[in-house]
Amino acid sequence: MPVSLLAGLIRIVAFIFTLVALWVFLRSYISFSRKTIRLPRWLGVPSKEIRAPKTKCGLSKPCLDNFFAFKISSGAANVVGPSMCFENEIIMSPVRNNVGRGLNIALVNGTTGQVLRKGSFDMYSGEPKLLMNFLEEIPDSTLVLVASYDDPGTKMNDKIRMIFSNLGSSYANQLGFRDSWVFLGAKDLKNKSPFEQFLKNNPETNKYEGWPELLELEGCVPRKVF
Figure 1 (spheres, rainbow, N blue to C red):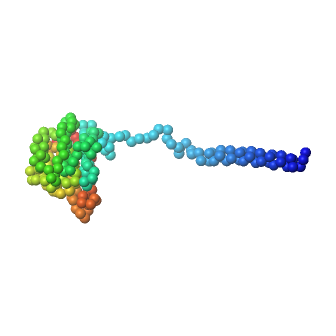
Figure 2 (figure 1 turned 90 degrees about the horizontal axis):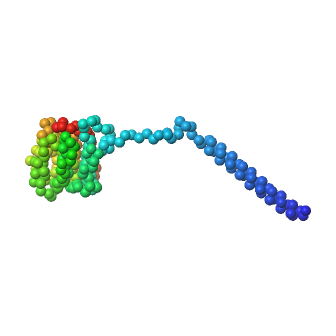
């Protein structure tokens, strides 16, 4: 056999041997790597995913029986409108296109939880008589949910303040230009409502330029308690 042919065969055999050795090495290495990164069962993903129970309106904790769940958010400056959730139903929000500048109010039957009326009242350039008529027609045992947006106070008058105070508000008398306010009261409430938040428009403390930060109020209101 010629020397050149023999040398060529030797090179081919050496090349094949190298490939086989490399394949064996890689297979062993990958298998070892997989074994070394395998976690113990007690550190693995649990077989059943643990989820916290959902609450109505996304409350931090569920309400007891015979209590209504609610969440009210005021508007953010004059950009994002307010929203209201009652018993897991969004009753007023920008998405529903039923909120506006000023005061946004929803009336709910305090016994059945049925939404009776909703309204948005411009308190900057609107007619305050419209709001006054709306408030004077509130039936007994009715829950009143209120959320401000942009400016709730410019057209506020003493009679409207008195009506809100009789509904249980502690801050209606202070409400002014671009204040933030969220409130839940009721017709003929004998005491002040525990469900209210108020933030004064103050250039030194405002979160947004010209407006205080939005407010959020949530809780569980009992049936017929008012």
